[in-house]
Amino acid sequence: MIKPTVFFLGFAFLASCPSALHLYQPAHDYTAEEIAELNWFELTLLENEPYARQGYVFDSDFLMDHYLATDWYGPVHGTEEHIAAAMKFTAKEERDMARFKEAAAKLKATYDGCWPVASLAGLEVKYYREVSSAKVPKVQLSPEFYDLGAADGISAWSRPAVAADDALEKEPAAGDYYRVFFREGGTIAAVGALGQSHGKSYTIWKAWFDAAGALRLFHPIYRRDGKTSKVAIAAFAGSAEDARVRCLISGDASRIDMEVRGGPYARLPFTVILYE
Image (cartoon, rainbow, N blue to C red; front, side, top):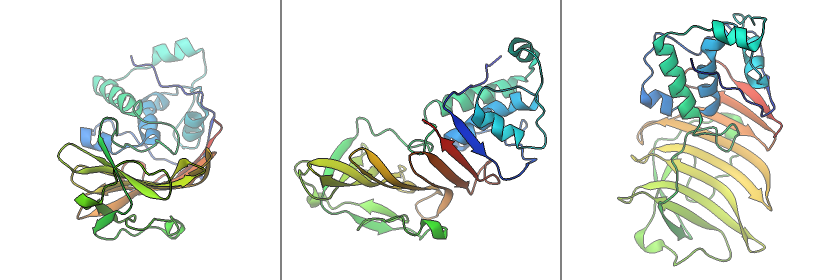
């Protein structure tokens, strides 16, 4: 039996109204592609719902507040050992929970890592003063995300194409510049717009792209001297020709407001308060 994930990160989950929504569908065959599109919060709720359906009482505020806000959860009273011993799962449920848990372990329960992005470790890095972009169909963002502050050369509906003779010899010591991560074969994995303040770099925004060039995550974020003043993230699904917003995230260092527009979480916008 898989032990349920228990978190002590100090989450408070704000639900708007009781919900009959079951995120986990036992009869559904979850593909690797589907799981790869899920963020940490979705994966964690999917992993633990089979326990919640049987009344398990969680140590996590995030999980308990979520399930108590539904109209189907009924906590079972008793010792943790007796409740856990009474849990019965099918072989498929156990396989699904293990897959959700493995995928969630690669992410973070914060705005900075709540969406799957490829690791940039080991990729070729080049620096540029300018980044041009090849346009893909414009993605319609909700009004509150119009002021994301996209810098010149790339926007939430662009993918980058960098001129081969535009690269700097090394990371500049002053002024704004772009850091571009290349996969083997030359496709762009990520672009970051950076600035310099008192000799130190700070992030203006980041964008991740899949191997086909489709925008996966656009992450406008302003950081200076170790402080974050603004976070707004638009995560995308689809292809380079048909990119669509799947998730909108905003917040600061203490909270996350997330609106998921696709996948199993699409009917449940939520806010998470981070006490880390």
